[in-house]
Amino acid sequence: MTTEFDLIFEDFEAELLAIEGMIASLATTGEELTSARARIAGANAATLLLAATFEEFARQEVRAVFVAKAAGATNFNAFPEKIATAVWRRSLERLARAAIDDLSRDARAVEAKLRATVEFCLSRDVKADVSDDVGHNDQNMRPAELNRLFGQLGLTNVCARACDYEPLAAHLGCDTAGKASVELQSRLEDFFRRRNEIAHAIQLNSSSGPSGLSADILLFREFGKGLAVESAKFVGQTSTFANTNAIPAEEAVSAEEEFVEQPDAQPSA
Image 1 (tube, rainbow, N blue to C red):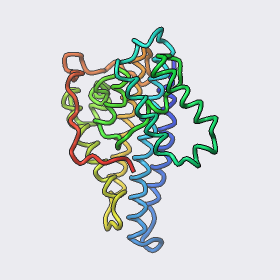
Image 2: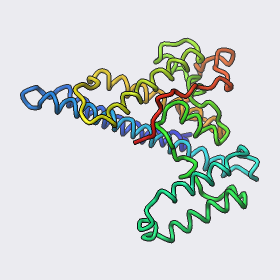
Image 3: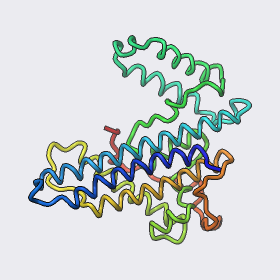
Image 4: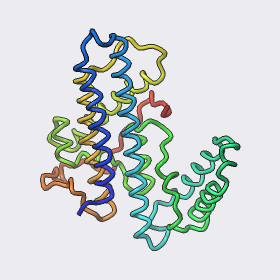
């Protein structure tokens, strides 16, 4: 049976196909039709779009985990102890950063959001909808940020767990999930380093080529399936992407082996 996590991935896959079409046009456009500067700008735009698309996919997966977990919860003990503090702080910080004029235009929505925050954090009502705050990322979706978002719901070290998905480990050229998790971290860090260089530079004279961008898309496609599989498994569901060739448990990475946050991590722009 198709899960909500699979449906979210299918939307993500559709966006990836659109970006692939964008990249293909860069590869087939002749020099006589566009300048080198325009081709670089197009490739860099594709990189930024890919990063934003993946981040939205990850946020939706986190929200879906929260909704599924809350639906099956009988009391607040279904969530880790610190989630109320995290949601409370994040909700109020997001409201504090918003312009007061913007908030006043939709006061009822703001009141509803505050009410849900109070009900969840103070009254411990698991049915209160605070999914937007649960899925809000403070940094780029590097491994440490992904682990933080899923970990607040009890799904610890999700990036390493996703490497139990055999097609992802195979794509990374690894025969165990432990090796795959190290390789995944390296590739994700490299991608977001390039993403941040593009986002924060005034002018760039180079970019990833079509083949490099296609490799990035393939990585996120396989990683996205791994996240969908692990998210569904965590709430007692079975993703349609789950396979019978999962890496054996004795070779799977331990949930205690956490990714190390890289020192050059920057806020999402």
